[in-house]
Length: 322
Image (tube, rainbow, N blue to C red; front, side):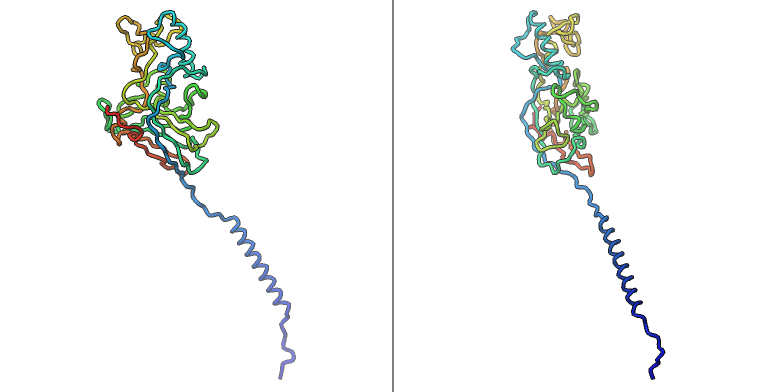
């Protein structure tokens, strides 16, 4: 017999439970969506890559050295006394003041052999010149006597941004422009002598395609001066005397370390060019006698840091044989 008083379930309770479950499910989906929206997968930055092209057999003026410059025009040496003033005035303007960026017209600067390092196939267009470092290393074991040393020395190190300047073109050299050091026991900074003598311009200059970009571009290049057999001509001892006013006389008159006294020339003024023995330009010749002697490392110092190239200097020009 059916119990007439058995309680029945109310249908509304089940409906309420389903609504609550639906709301909870929606809330979970919204929270999960928000988490997925804010979630990012971290991918580490990729180191840049750069290819290099080398070109040897070139020549460039030694812009960084006013003593290796003569004024424009045709001059026959020894100078006549009547030519001293004209030659001296022109030398100060076109050679000395040009090297100090105070005069726009360059004189005839002596040229030296150079090789080029050309940047090619750059993987990114935002590689800052301030993040690319050039380091010239010398293995002292390959330096000849008396410069032989049992260690590696740094002849030059600096960023491309600080090595872009060269005399007569754009402003003064950067205050933190790199200076020359040692190649084995050879102190090139000391041997480079007067007038910007220990600046990087005696060894290498970075030349960008445009001066308006602070980033490395395809076709940017460096010139490396090559000291292989012989010296450039030096005009430091052409005219002047210790008592003559400046200008037109040159500031080294009577300086025996630059213009050594000679027969008939007690003040060292020889009225003509001499070999540039008072300073030094270019990579030392022993760098081209062994592939292990000298190396140029070009490094990206951003994140992540990486070695872009390690270049044996030996490969940048044929051996000199002396």
